[in-house]
Image (cartoon, rainbow, N blue to C red):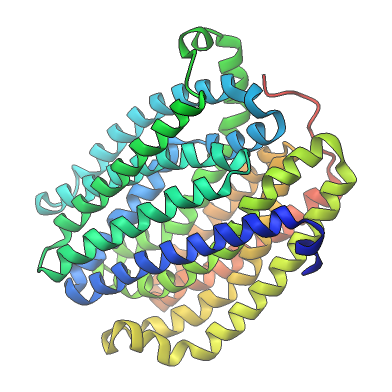
Length: 421
């Protein structure tokens, strides 16, 4: 399995760059989360966690699968994909208006003192999708260094500015404001780089092709719906715990989840390097793409199992050490969520492989079922098991997604005859 890095040195180099930047950026942001948990009240920390979850889910409506398609098309077609980039950006701007309206409608139902925090967090996460829009273009060109610099720098500036504010006694509103300012600044830098590289030129001529827009939407929306449901699935537990048990339960669950989520940087970094290569190979050398996909899946299964075992062994002292004795309830949640790392790592590879084969519509169906099942299980288990219930549901859902993706890859033919334009 490790031989993949010897046979494909570019993948190894890009993976190392991406992984290092993700580790640095995530450590900085995680330090901010720990400081927020200790300096804010449990109610304010729960409000912050709820706002991030809500904004993260809604912000995905402003992307609708465009980012991953950008990487695939830029990797396969190079600068010839520039019309695709322009149309994707136009479509993203229209979708962002929908996000802003939905965000306002949802927040208007919250207590008046919470609305400013929730709205700022939502706008921050919507702005971040524009930063990622630029980053995924650089990823398609295999310019991982440029992508890594943008995303890591954003997290570091967010963590440093937010940490200073919290240390000086600032509250959750100031934390949300400093976060948005950091993201907005780096988003402006990323679009300046795109403009210099020529990706945003000639938009007036490109914008008028309605047939091309329809083709773009036919490809993007199935993937976008799948991604939205996947994100909704990852944040559903927080949203339901907020409604059924309150901010304290959200804080306990989020404390455990905050330790599991950073582990995703390993498969994310590997796929950031591998996905453009697989996308290009699927157009030119399919046996090579199949071989690479299998090796990546095996490698991720190995690493996922190793991390899960370590987490199970250290859970009893790690949670109290990081968060304090008030968060001991999160230990059991953390141990159960650790088991979900194994199938979720494998799913990173399988879902990206389906996208490279233009079979993203299957992911939408699978994620829809997973989201519905997760919601039902949370509704049934939260009253009986409390914060442990959603963790059990996550393990079941990730395992189901893995099995369905494997079935499609084994028994369904690809759908790659059409070009993007």
